[in-house]
Length: 232
Image (tube, rainbow, N blue to C red; front, side, top):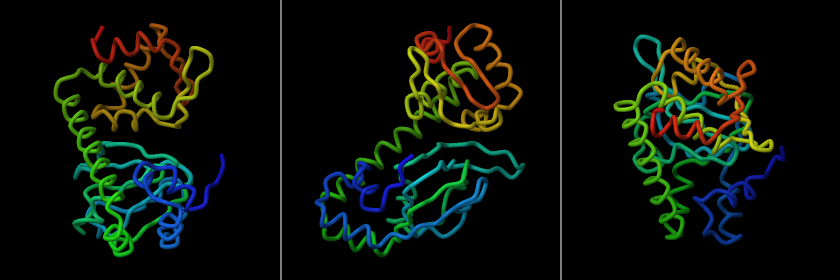
């Protein structure tokens, strides 16, 4: 995996795709790099929100914790993804936890530096608003699935989404390049580890996936999509 410098990474994400080189260079000079160990928190729910985060290397899960110690994984971000943008505008506390799924390196852009930049770049402002809209739609889809779809359909749909975002093709098969435990899969769709174990076994027995430890390979994407959207 190549390790990109700040300007190169900023240039690869939709948020900054309209910027000219001189603007990218100016913005990149404001970021700093932070390293995280596996399981380490980047921030916790309730922490002061003052920064935008861009992943240089690794993966970060966004988690909603409960008082009982359970959690729901809202989404997972990987190299090139950005998050934390809401706090850049309202300065409100974080609404979720952000934890490293593996050793990760994160670029951090402070709120004051970012707002100063946006004030002089209307194109960047338009890009931000577009990305915020996509995030809201994603949250709506998650809530709809949690309310109306079965565990079987929710898991199938999540595996399709993970394959589309993190999949590596091997002929007709797709390998999901993430090391996810059954509990983490359950947290992503609002289900228990036991239910995920049962559903994964069903998918395997029906010839839809191959599972080795915490790695999943999809061997029949057509049938998995049908299970996700038509529950058959």
